[in-house]
Image 1 (cartoon, rainbow, N blue to C red):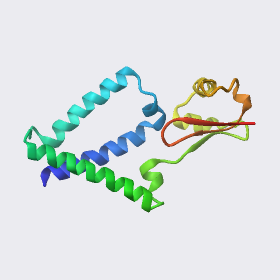
Image 2: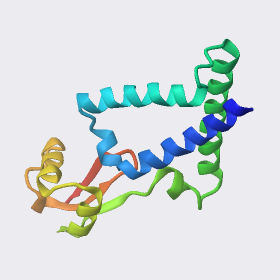
Image 3: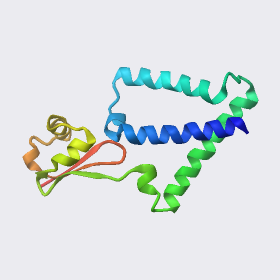
Image 4: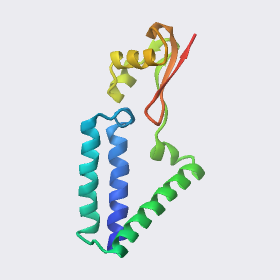
Length: 145
């Protein structure tokens, strides 16, 4: 039972940390970020199992993570009020052609980064964008005139 409780705690801790880090950072990871995730994974494993390398311990941890993942997905699907908490909400970055600087600041996105994303979407200038939305997965969707 101790493994289940530790796994559940770490699961929700990771959920909170990933929401705090921001979807934009998670969608565009640099090599250092990947290495950091591997190191965090190792630290989490040590914290959850406390050197319990048994097959039973491993099975318990994996099963608990799987149940929690499926449960949060199910809750997100069935309980609409939990969806913004579990998945986040799309954030409008440009509305009616006007850049929402406060939204950019909150998401730690610069105008240059927004312009680069627009160019990758075959949009030459931000002046051509009517709406830009930071989706829950971290990508930016653009609507032009």
